[in-house]
Image (tube, rainbow, N blue to C red; front, side, top):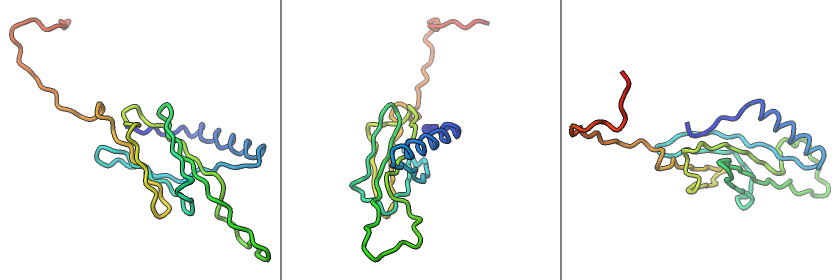
Length: 148
């Protein structure tokens, strides 16, 4: 498998670290829901980012870790308007995905449409299945002898 599933204990630890640093700094970084699929010779990640300005989306790859971050601005405050229910989060959203070594991180493509960021990560050529030709022996000893 080319995508590496995350360790739930590490995720819980990361959540506590985010909450602790948010409390200390006054900022928050929230995760974004994600689905992952395999289609032909690529892996597709789909991340929900409704209401995010596409210009704020940032993708980076370092040491086979894909980091996706985006910012959803707070709704504008106007005089005389009081929020009754405010469930839609705003601020910085981020997600890290550990990529397997069989993926081609040099050719990642991303598209943002209708509030969904789709990231396509191709399988590296060296990791694709290939046919190996079998030749017939010519009477010479094999290079490695087998023990009986």
